[in-house]
Length: 371
Ligand SMILES: Nc1ncnc2c1ncn2[C@@H]1O[C@H](COP(=O)(O)OP(=O)(O)O)[C@@H](O)[C@H]1O
Ligand SMILES: [Mg+2]
Image 1 (cartoon, rainbow, N blue to C red):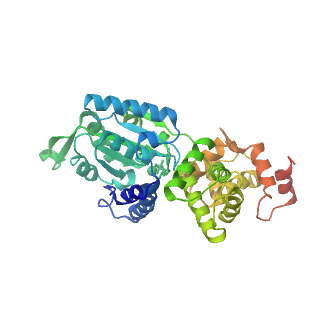
Image 2: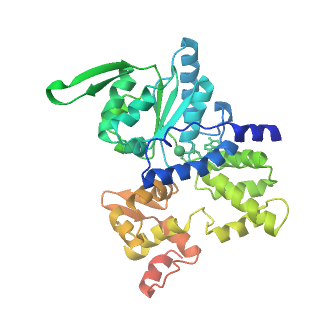
Image 3: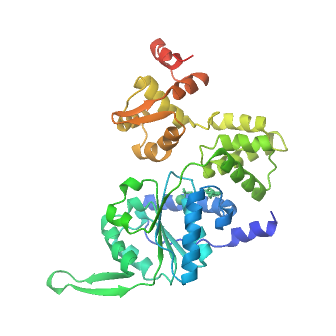
């Protein structure tokens, strides 16, 4: 990869509307998080649909929508993307804007506190622009209601004064494309959901796709990795490109300090031992989740609230970050009564030495019963 291209990526400004809207601590931390992410994004984020790896069906249908809109000289239909963090939702929003050659304004549900925050953004959109609302399931109800007519009729009604003096003024908007992203499709109200013409779920990536992600990122970052190293990183990435990129960076650092050379499988294994990422890509929190179900709740079923209480973690973190992969990889199943650990979970935990905390003989036998 030519150096010029990397440089160009760094220099290109990312527009974000969320910066000037609120200054709550949460919004601040979101902005910080966003900044960190933007750095990575500028370097590694695919910028064209053709560079976007995997998610074949989603890419195909977006490609068709983009091409058709271009032919008609129209904006792309509104798009709702859902799926666990790090699978490429934000990336797709930027790609849509770039492929359509329009501007993009990004904000998030929690950043839009009042109707006025949204109106300010909407009235400044230019023809065809993309408005990207991340975490759209956290949009306050009052703000959401403004969005209905904005996305449907490209107009908003602004009410002045109260009571008998109330007057409303209807303002026309340019036709734009709303791209919403969420980790929780289930939390989006049906009136909002129905207004998205295109709704797509992103799924965890296959190892083959993740190998491509790692290879692409390694070449952009100019770090040498051999085939087995690539595969090892891909295998341990919880089906998630963001994690693949993160692991690649950690292993790169480790290699630079300890080995000076090509990233290989053994070096990756050493580095990941240090990071607390196990053979299956499970993190410490993933394993504590499984241990809680197995040891504390004797394999389950255990309610999510109960698991969260034992782990002293937010239920949201468990639902958004931990559970989807554990379900997908077959470590747990969901039953009407709660989460149950599968045989795979027992085998995996006992193979990796069981829980680190002190446990009773009886608990140990629960863990090792499959041995
Ligand atoms: N399909 C993909 N191909 C290559 N890299 C990807 C892909 N999807 C995501 N990534 C990488 O993963 C990172 C996280 O993606 P992002 O779009 O921020 O995820 P999300 O918004 O779903 O949390 C991006 O910066 C990008 O480098
Ligand atoms: Mg995102």
